[in-house]
Image (cartoon, rainbow, N blue to C red; front, side, top):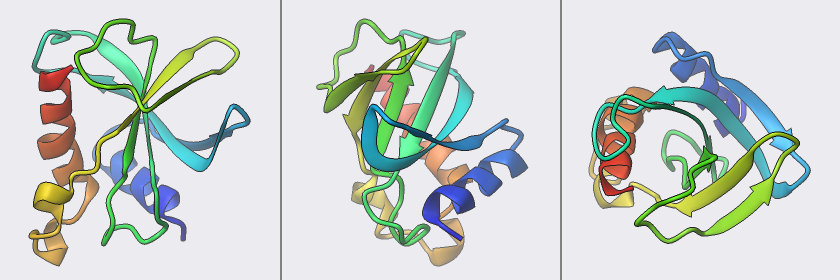
Length: 126
């Protein structure tokens, strides 16, 4: 099972309607896409279509490295790259959670931790 497929399964188990997709405009591999309700920061109360993708195919040892956000037009974070799909404009951020991920116990290296700890702080910074 690939890193994207493993993350997709875990996100679905958490209640997200996640899917693994590829986009010809993004050539770095598969993206796990899902709707994310923002609970903190300046976008609190909004829902965004987001994606996560990997630099290495060794999840859960190596977490998702990139966060893709659709139709986000103002941000305080540096955008790594942009691409356009038929109906969405994507901003990609290089945001690995290695500052804490590497010290987690193996049982805690999962999408629940990634979503609750890492994505929450990403949205606080955007």
